[in-house]
Image 1 (spheres, rainbow, N blue to C red):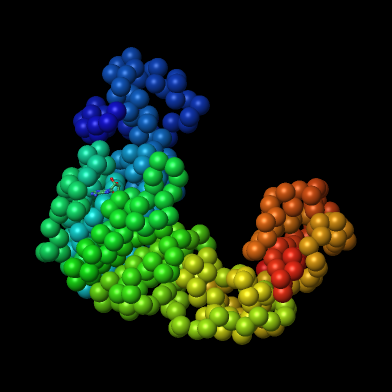
Image 2: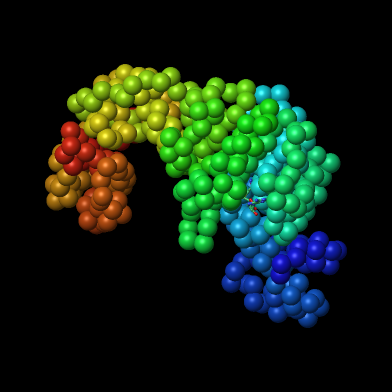
Length: 389
Ligand SMILES: C[S@@+](CC[C@H](N)C(=O)[O-])C[C@H]1O[C@@H](n2cnc3c(N)ncnc32)[C@H](O)[C@@H]1O
């Protein structure tokens, strides 16, 4: 079905209520029962929507997801609520009261902006996606703040808005697109739109090369629960050329201080694994300074120190053993230490963690837990063993 309208009728809504939470194994039986009283096409649309809602719970939480409307791409491409709320809060703190959300998708960002009390013009050129955004604004009681328009963003006048937000489509036919000029619309268009507005935020893939960040922008890498979610280029009222890493929940923000690369030093008592947003933002030096540490290797983002510091930006491990990469030796050591749980982490190693875990610890050898870091130390493949400090 490529039209949401039938699901928005009283019959469609009743069906959606009826199929809520249907397990995949029960779909056939539920469909057979409902088709006795409802058109087959409407029944499959409701079941399809129920499936999308279940997928969306991870991003939007059950309470919202079960009221919202999705398309398959719309769920996939939407911003998770935590990240959207953080960004909306930052726009609000810049004094923004109205935003043109260009490329609104099913409305993940528009919803968070409206909930922050910001008036939103939400634009998407795909009719079904725009219909979902409109249905979502209605379903969540935000229609008074969100004006959804089905249009090409390159043809929309945004002059009367305090800010533009652009979240271009990043996925092509074959997986993710990393070339920002292959975004739809291209990043260069979004940057021009940003420079015309008093404030702007552009959402880009976290893999964006630092060289591709325009000089006028501040770049912020955001992680949630330790997973890097996105980078945002901020224009207007933020520090041009600045870099920061923000960790959610929190939020905790580490601003870049332009430090030179940390020194390489010998492995100390502690190893610090910086958060992915810190690494992407190239702020490992800021963390190293905070924990009085240096790098284990010039090319690896593991920080080592003799001192134990608690930092929100890195997880600290106490290192108990260091040995050259050797599976047999690791296996013997795990037996000797009566290890039952082995966590494998790696940076700068091509070894498959799961395979190593199977080989080194085919069955539990006792009650203890160990973390092994596969990495390079002074260029040599090395295993560092330890546990969270
Ligand atoms: C990454 S999604 C936006 C997700 C949204 N921020 C959310 O949280 O739900 C990108 C959207 O851009 C739309 N799009 C791509 N090029 C466009 C254009 N030139 N004009 C309008 N919409 C466009 C696509 O239809 C898609 O829905």
